[in-house]
Structures are given as C-alpha cells and as structure tokens.
Image (cartoon, rainbow, N blue to C red; front, side, top):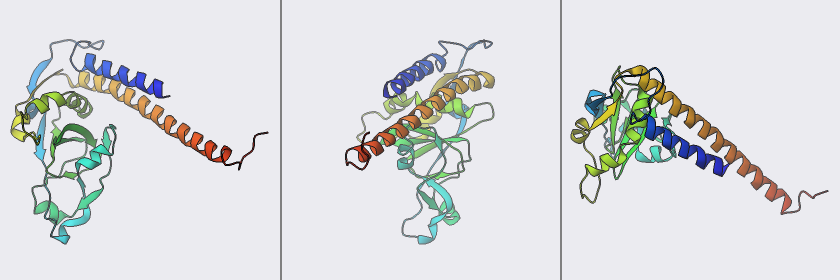
Length: 227
C-alpha cells in the first residue's frame, strides 16, 4: 500500500505538470491559453484577528481559520471545520472578512501557498490571503493551479527573514489557464479523481496498520494463541 500510494502520488504530480501547463490538452479542447493576473480570476480578501482581550469576540458561531487548520488537513483539499470560532461582533470589529463557501483559503505568512477549498463560509486570521473565484473560473481548477505556484509566491518575498506575501503582489501575479471554464472543469475532474483514489488508498493503509497493531497486541501478549 505504501508503494502504491507513492506511485499514485507520482502519477498525480505528472498529471498536474502536463495538464496545468497546457503541455497536454484534453480531447475536444482547442485554442491558446490566456495569461491572466490572479485579480482577474478571483476577489482576493485578507483576514484578521479580533482582540483577544474581548471575550465577547470569541467562541461564537463564525468559523475562524488559522494555519494549523490547514496543516491538519495533511494535503487534503477540503476544509470543513475550524478549531476556533469567533462571534459576529468579533467579525465586525476586526479586519477579518467572511469568505463564502467554495472559495480558496491560502496561507500567506511563514509557510506560503498552502491551500484548501472551504466547504463552509469561514473567516481567517491575518496569515491568509483568500480567493473568491469569479463565475468564469472553476474553483477546483484554481485550487490546483495555486498549489503549483508556491515557489513563485515565495520568490516575491525576497530575502526577508519572515516570509510574507501581500495582496498587492498577488493581485499582479500572472498565471496561464484555458479561457473556457469547461476545460478548466475537465482538468480539475481528472485531478480530483486522482485525489479520491489517493484518499481511498490512505484510508486502507490506516485500517491495515490498525489491524496489524491489534494483532500484535493479541499475539505478543498471549491473549490469543495460535492453533
């Protein structure tokens, strides 16, 4: 299972390299890809943190995302819940903004370019830049495209000790993509299917490891004897 997962990850990496650069085109799609800035693809929003000295700003109903929530996903692309929540007052009296569902939250400090698609409306702290895709852009495609731009984002941070990318830099950042949303969706579907297969294999691996652990507990303590 470990070897199969590694092989599947390599296959996905190769598919991303081919499909997200236009090197390989899917059947039925033609025409040149366009160069666009990120601000032409999505509304880019920032995050913020309510005052920690105001109890009425915290433990409310508004999901509030921090980088640790993205780390906890371990590479999986969907964010469904956050560890902390703020109140409507906390949202109103801070620079945090509400990010609608089916947007992309991206870390923009220290660790830059870690992305997730939020499946519920969320707010984020100031360590994020968030992308609300326009109607002409497939959110899954944009997610995969952004994950390939990490080195480009980091290079914009220069030699700073504490890496951070600003909204102004992202607004002007250029990417290539198919102008037809249908082609974006078709590419994203292939990559999503690979992610689904990977997730299933990882789940099997987790179950197999748990089974082995249980067998060791039984057999190496003498609780279960071989016939």
